[in-house]
Amino acid sequence: MKTFERGLKACNLRVERGDAVVFEDLSFACPPGTITHLKGENGSGKTTLLRTLAGLVQPANGQVFWNGEVLSGPNSIKTELVFIGHQNGLNSELNALENLQFIAGLTQSTKIHDVKAALRRVNAEKFGSKPIRYLSVGQRQRIALARLLIQDATLWMLDEPFTAVDTDTKRTIECLLEEHVATAGIVLLATHQEFSTQDKVEYVILRNKQ
Amino acid sequence: MTRYVSTIRLVITRDVLRAARSQTEALHPLIFFALCVLLFPFAIGSDEGLLERIAPGILWVSALLSATLSLEQLFRSDYQDGSFELFVLSKASTLAISLGKSLTHWFISGLPILLMSIPLCLVLELNWATTQVFLASLFAGTLTMSFIGAAVSALTVGLRGGGLLLAMLILPLYIPVLIFGSAAASNAAQGLPAAAELYFLTGLLILAVTLAPWATAAALKIRLS
Image 1 (cartoon, rainbow over the protein chains, first blue to last red):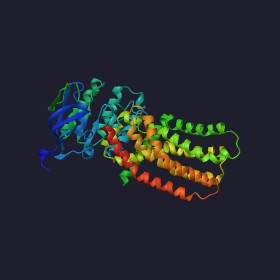
Image 2 (cartoon, each protein chain N blue to C red):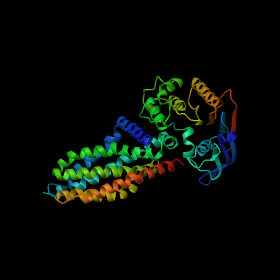
Image 3 (spheres, helix red, strand yellow):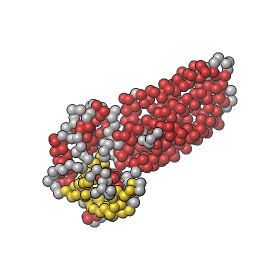
Image 4 (cartoon, rainbow over the protein chains, first blue to last red):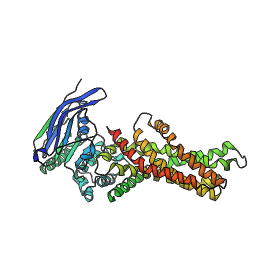
């Protein structure tokens, strides 16, 4: 496979929700080793774009390419993807350890034994044994981010990863992003906040249609 | 193949643990089942032999309603907390996850109903031969209902009025199970052979196990788009 084809590419994407066009003629590329920051006002379609790129939403027009092949659903991309949406995929009755072990098992991760280390990295080991429903939003977010460390995936899609987290955690996330990009990973994130990494960040700006 | 099995085991372990923690999920439908069965003797009165004749029907309808009641919860927390995305976007096969979720429903709802039926059969004065046939038919029936139910549950989760919609969609689909299930038990009560009905129930079970997980997997994807 030619090197320039690696990574994620969007060509002339047009996505409709009901009768409304969310965005159209959107083209960009995310080669390995880059961070792409999706910016835009509330309701401009950042989440929809992420879901389209993950293969969950079918575009009305245009195509998404993953490593040079057209994406026709989640199946061809899911083996190399971590997707953390607004809801973080943590069951509220189970504790962090149980949740992460389940996720590691489900994603057939080779890092299944590193769950505790991952919790330590995001500074969440202290509340690792409490059921998720007793935790604050920021604490939950930290545990969700531990998923990045236990799922071996090239492509990270994060929807508002900085919501409700403190400055230390924000710094940890920035470090994680840098490390991932340094190992030829790809990061796509939608956020309103500015963040600092030493790596170059590409921007995709979405505007409201109305 | 081993991956399929490990995914199924993973889903069942997680969900049974979840249900054990929240308790209400498994306990409420079970109490509903027992109460539903126990209401009939009060309504029917002490007519000699009548209760014994209609007991299999009472048990079957109550089991069916109770299984429907617990279906709504099967995917609810997964839909709300974003596990749906995880199911569809993880390396594990969505089909194996669907199979695991269906079996989970049987462990949370079908198995307790099956166990609770034993004392209830005694209360309704079914003889031991009838009880045995009834339990065999209930085993196949609840398993079939869990598999069909998981597909409809995945399709209706999170919709407005989803619970009622679920019941309206699912109850007609349960009619074949109900017909053969209660026929098996009432045949046995009259001393007639019940093998044919049990074979039919097994056939329905095989059909549900092989086809319904595909529908559940498709429903999971549909609900996300």
